[in-house]
Image (tube, rainbow, N blue to C red; front, side):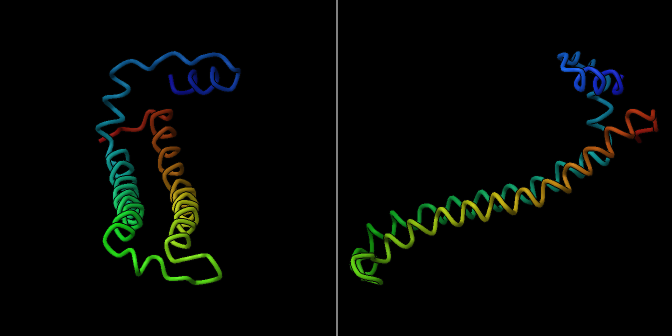
Length: 122
């Protein structure tokens, strides 16, 4: 069945949805649970970090305006630099996710291969 889905996907045809038993098999696989755990260990801390980092700017400007208004280079102050840094932080997180996703993809491919070969899932 997995081979059928792969063949349909490579031919451009819309793949048929696997039946519920396939999803139940995948869900019961230790590799799948490990994949979900790995993703959560990356996504949750990075999301929390970014949200905190994002809200530091408005909080700092609101509570510490004199500090954030300190000039760094000509008319550029700390608030502008911090706002600009958010772009770089977002790009760094995206880069880190791309690197981590390679591992997620390898695990997902092993799961698909295991399903396609008919190996026992437990």
